[in-house]
Length: 499
Image (cartoon, rainbow, N blue to C red; front, top):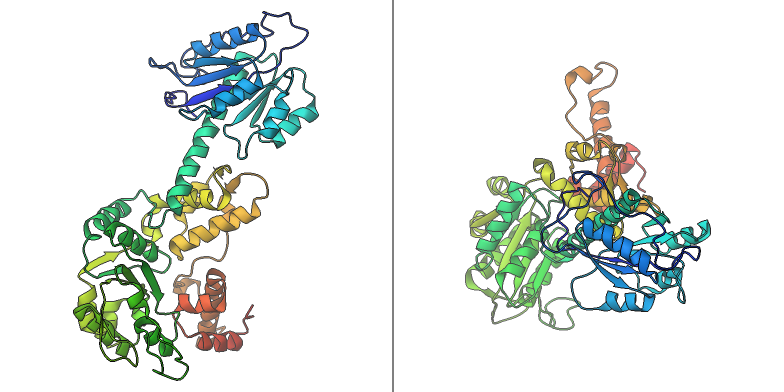
């Protein structure tokens, strides 16, 4: 935290228990006046308006007086309490949250260590331990109970101010991580500071209230479903958001899944079943990977969009539905139309309001905000995210072929490996298979392998990378846009282990 940070909205609780029995009552056991320059990195700000409230808890009036003088000089607004019970009462009092606790381990009656142990978890404020008599074991125990620092008495003013500054910085960090965690957990929230994301958020706000169908395009892992959720939340529609992954449902079952069926419509149809379109009545239907929908179903979907009616399999009369349709694909639907794999009339019907999500490599300024948000989500608000030297540059330089999903997987992997310490990102953490690119002719050694062997080598590398990114054969098949059975056969032919 810089010395020019404004703490006027912060509130600090300092509980300085127990007096040193060797010190006479009314005297201060350590000097507290800090004579350093105002622009010293140790000097805390001196705002004209009342600064952060600091609660000083001590049974020694002399210690309270000394702390009050130092902290008043440094721009704080000290408060006082002379017991842990009074400190707890002030902790629970209504008002802005407190930001810091300075806790002596030796208090008459209830000790500081006992108070620290009975405070709720996570601790309501960062805790700095202050004591002149505590044993090393007690100090270690206090740190295990959540204290962020230990200051021995008598402390120098510089040491005390540094501890305060670090604790305030930790408090702000935790608040920011909590905010990011809450924002990320909120459905539909879109993290990112880039101009592309700002433009996308503005466009979502503008088009969400409309009932017009929207086509969301972008590479795999860019967050198309999250955009669909944002559109639904901003639309004001009171019904559900019903999502269907057209690529994950076999073509033979997709029609019944979407349109529903009547009893006896086909073998095994023992009861009426409402399809996803009817389930989304009053809300939004999200068709993910629409480019994988069979042509015959595309015609039925077009009819629903045009008539607002759906016919169940085996049914008679159509059912009127009030549904807003959002569709997403990573495929080039315009190319699919030219090749006869996608209906032109459905493409035009859906492409009235196209939303294109740029890949993560084209918006590197979003990488760190996303990494912080994922770290807060996966590791918790109390675990700081630490960037080792060179990590930010490495994160920005990495091509992220799996986009936001790959970044989240990377943060999750680092969190699983971190142990009990902070979540640290280092440049070497990104080491792995190099991104697949077309190898230049100058790097190929021609004449030593046949054309088929070169092709097999590249295919082997491609499939291994897809298996690593997709996490399974099914995931790799989706990334490579191939049939899972065909991929199984290629694994066997190329000698690649299936697991």
